[in-house]
Image (cartoon, rainbow, N blue to C red; front, side, top):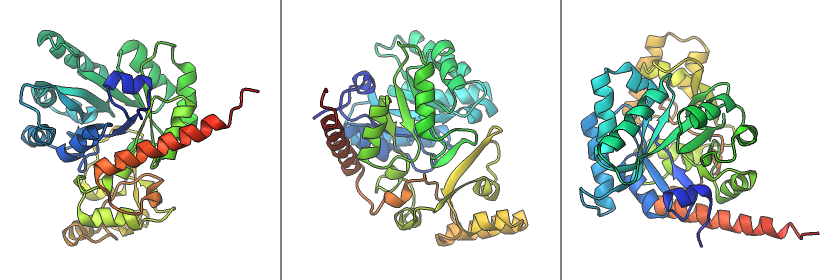
Length: 346
């Protein structure tokens, strides 16, 4: 039984669920298996070079058993700030890795000049006369950005990211159940589909956002705990063992890794451990960085980075990505049916 929304109609899928581009975790295998199960998956360009990104996209194509000339029903996500810090030639070359492979969608987030990359993608499609233009997803955390994305940038899909999200997001983002109604209230009637992201883990979560008015849901942390995720075993075990108060918003891991080029106003949500504790207590940064590096080598959960959203404690085991999609779909259908019984028409 398909769940029909404006998003599923746009994408030609049966489940209104997206596995987002998560740097260091979302590779070709995860994107392909999520798409194969009836949802939609993204590869993260993240910190990859062009050759490695191409390899991951090719992996997805192979898993989906598609010829090189076939359109590829996955997406690729980019940090816009990273494109902006590259030369024009380098940035466009990274975008072309996705576009030359005929991916269905490109996801852009965290930058000052998103419109620049949107114009490039639109121009590429026009020059190459793509019969099905690349769908552009833009991640936003405010009403102002949502209106700019719709009215000025003419994006195809909006992704509203609440502050419950794992990984990086804007510190000022409100909770998802506040953000989504704010945006829906402000959007014009002909606005593109709005997806909801942040702290979601179950089919019930998906159903609740659909009832609230979103056209689909984005679940990142849930797909980290799959065999197809690029997270290592220690990271996946940490996700399964995490408790309900395990996450914290912090820049500790970016300081430990030296990944400090993020735009102002952004931090990340991850599992709290001694790396965060040391930063909070003012331990010398060189000491923290050395302990972090050793922790990565040893797979030490008290030191390594594990991005995770607020619902991480709901993950009890590692499951195949296809099974996760089916579980989410069935759970959403069950809750939607239950919700429909609560209204009698009187």
